[in-house]
Length: 398
Image 1 (cartoon, rainbow, N blue to C red):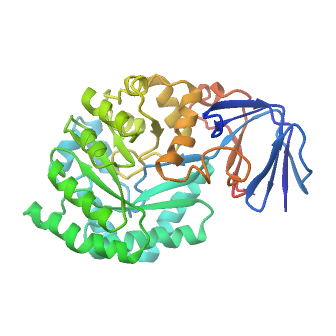
Image 2: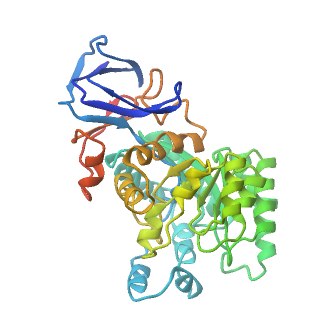
Image 3: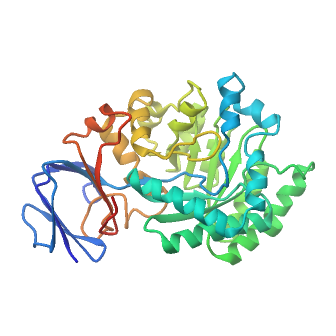
């Protein structure tokens, strides 16, 4: 059944033909067969008519960095951080990523599927219609394959689009005192098995002091590329490790975090057109004040995407509207820039810009009707999201 959106106040979206942010006012949109059929002053009438009451319409959010495959939260670590412990100190005492391993390894596929499906419900309710989702809390061949299987099962039954990423290189599991042996396992067993399974699109590595070094990251991502897994990398989150430069050298599609990126790293990302996926929710959730230098990146030509980094430890938030608030307050982004970074540029980093990320004819009918008239009201109304309707594939979800 075709849906006719009438009486729009304004539509804010990237225009891929003119390659700019564009606002259109007093228009109508026709949705049918899951895609956008018409946009204009007057469109063909659909059977299902929705009066938008002069409100703002934007694309659905594309959250291009999440870690949703875990069993339980890590509330105790939050208490430790409130008491003054750093993320690194918690990890060194056996917390952090390590504490989620047993949960994923011991959980059944069905247990994880139910948890992940519920989390996807929450994403949709908050306006996220496409999500990149990583494995990385099992850190054994069996549990990493299980995590990806869970993502595949959820994607088959859920409205949301899920883009799976293999991240066996999230940290070193406790049974591997010899880190080189674990890197061997990733390259010689995990990645070939993941490639044969055929679910993951990307391979990601946490390149950081205390985690995977530059040589290990290079070997893992090169092996991934040889097995048809495109490279992404967690880069320069806590200190400048040269990971941004490596991301450019290896032609990664995205370098993520970048709170401690150097000027050389920024220049490298710009030269090789690597998307910088910025995760201000992580900085906020960790109680840090070191936000990524987005203004400097933009001035030097780096393309910026915004994402939540949803995970059980360092960023237990799923709200892209709240990420917009942080981007405007702490990254010196305008609301228009932040909206495009959280829709169009996220889609670009996932290779999905022809399907999602903007409101254009023949693209998926993924959009948000807000209960506000102006974009600035989205962040001004913090913490409320002020979402009136969410459409995914032309279906009215919320």
